Image (tube, rainbow, N blue to C red; front, side, top):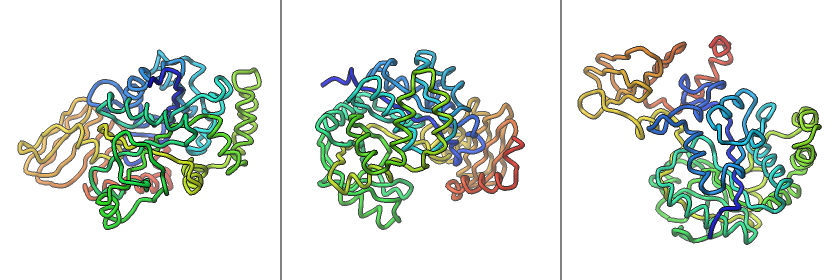
Length: 368
């Protein structure tokens, strides 16, 4: 089985608020080198996907603020393959636009969607899993690639499968589950019938667009009109006119959850070293270097210029040009950038998003 005719979409949006102030609305995490190399998350995603589909068949959907950065980081990507949203309308609009443009260029093609800000370590196993998902898509399923859980994680949604997950076995998704409590997540993992939902999708464009039209015509109709004008002189005018009318909704809610209830969604479990780099705990787990002398405090960043003295569990992200040092404090996260500094308890890492909302309400983010 080859995937040489596969078309791939990379949604590249969001601001990575749980990684503030390293990740910003104008310079989000997918443009940062959080891969352990000098390649950004976006570039690593491109490197991983091009062998599966070729640059000619790879599209990036991004916002106006990020289009120049995407083009600069991906010089091998054709300019026509950067689809620019005037403003974010959530995942359904972005993925539907890409599906409709692909369908216009290659009717009935198989397409896959993978986020720009995920890290995958086993690219060979990833390619094998994608190939099996393509098989399911060719059979008419809306396919997902679920991640084999390694722990009872409460920060992810789950896919309830029709049977215990097994490598390369295509099976039906019975239901999408929201982020559970720890007790529920533990039961999920112990059952073997649940996978993490990483929003990785594979389907035939005509199958997806038909489901979208049946379930959310308020999304499908303006997207279809925009796609009809794509690659023509009317593209920008049509996009500006119709994009504001597209509802803001996630593709899971709009299509995948109701389709799963009707038995139309399949999945293949993936076990290829996946991480979504969702917060600083994940960053230090993957890329941290011991700066405490005892393997209990870590730094990560371009220079890693950090010193921790008489403290444990300190995470330092020196993203600016200064030396960052701590003395006598423990279990804190310190992020230093050129124009903003964050200090928070490690047990509050998930609340950094809330902090950014407070700063935005106070107008502080507008000054950065």
